[in-house]
Length: 73
Image (cartoon, rainbow, N blue to C red; front, side):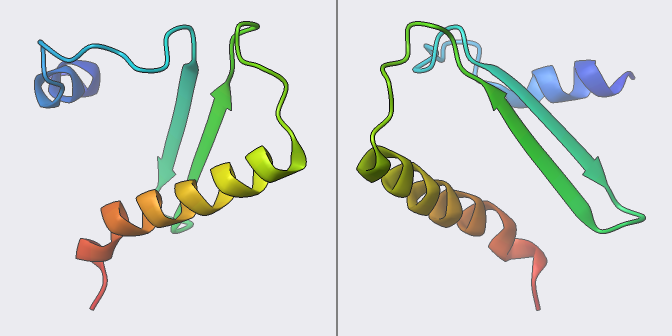
């Protein structure tokens, strides 16, 4: 089974995307113990204020922390 097929099995087929037009790029490198996450936002996203940027950064931190927590200890 290809990785793409395996990943597609994990997604809820009934899910409605809440971030239409956003392109997600996630690269996991076990050897370097590194995960890179990059998002390309569509033009329809409003201009972000400094407060928006801080809110996004902290929200992403806690969201990713919650996902990764099960791999610690």
